[in-house]
Image 1 (cartoon, rainbow, N blue to C red):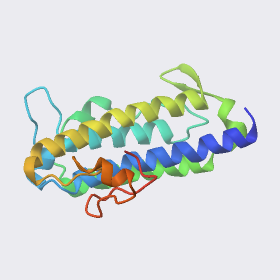
Image 2: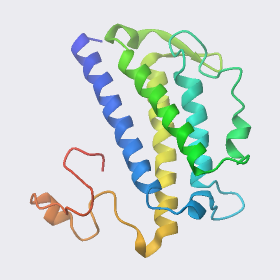
Image 3: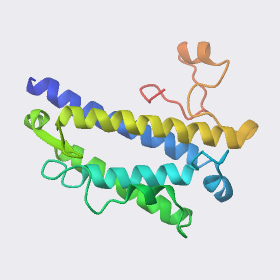
Image 4: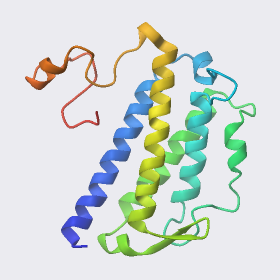
Length: 187
């Protein structure tokens, strides 16, 4: 991989991860504390549980990323799907710490690191494969968070992208100033 392509990749994955976080944060900001912990059925996770799981995954995957297995021995994944007395502030604090770990690690990577080998649960990955694995994983969960918040808010939902019926306005450079959507932001 050429340095310029590697540098572009590293900048782009940071941009996409930041976009995922922005979408999730925008959705979470719209829900009440009650909705934050609400499930839509017995088999579903709440927004709080998805955030707690993502935070645990981020801490495990991105701590000592180049030098230790991505599944840390002190991670207890099953507890990420239980609310054990945590309030919204505690879950949010874990969430923010997870993202800080992710961004600190990604921003420390050099182009020459991309072809290095790392392991996740003993399985070897190149750095690119490991990053892409997490990009996909967090994208799935970001979508779940947005879906749940939109479902819970119903008609009170404030769109995080181009509002329905406003695509032509946006395409003509008019974009809705109330949507929070800006050119270059994730769709």
